[in-house]
Length: 246
Image 1 (cartoon, rainbow, N blue to C red):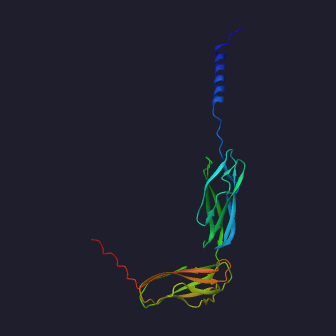
Image 2 (cartoon, rainbow, N blue to C red; image 1 turned 60 degrees about the vertical axis):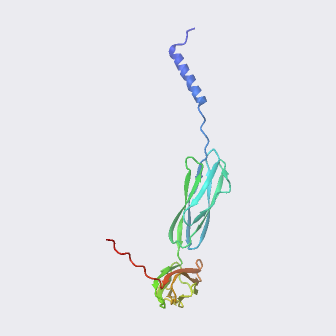
Image 3 (cartoon, helix red, strand yellow; image 1 turned 90 degrees about the horizontal axis):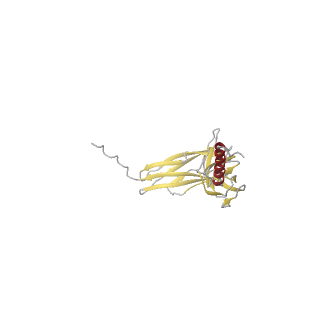
């Protein structure tokens, strides 16, 4: 029987070493995998001051438990963590999101950020989009009177026009400051319609800074109470410019 050649021995030793390396090599560690089938939600068209509720479904496509660490959002949205602290491999859980349109208008895009223990995607962005319609437009939305002398009264005009409604009625106008008064709303007779408000500021018997609101109650379906901010000063000394430097 012939003894094995040196070449055969070398090849055999190499095979043994490769097999040993394969046996001693650590197995690939398990990891969670975060996934959303629909990471974007379009709520369509709503009005100002409306609310939209939606559930994004998070799925664990990995082979280790998925933990959602944090859910944050941009302006207009609130989001809550899923009810499960850990999501098993292959399981799902809801992330509930509420969007409030407030006084936003036009096309809207808001983001929700989901942070988890997925090493490949530690932070995922979800998106809510849509269009917010405006029932009426107030111009100006805030009335600035500046500095008014004691004993004087200054008048400003505010118009309220329909935008995404054909018409509306003003039911009541009230001010929360005794020196801010509003005349009876004047119906505008042009094609667009709406109302004109004449706002009076003063008279004041002593210096005062004013930050108040005019509330206009209407028959609008979505924003029944319109708020107009009023700023002004009465009898305040004018600030003098600093002398020029030499």
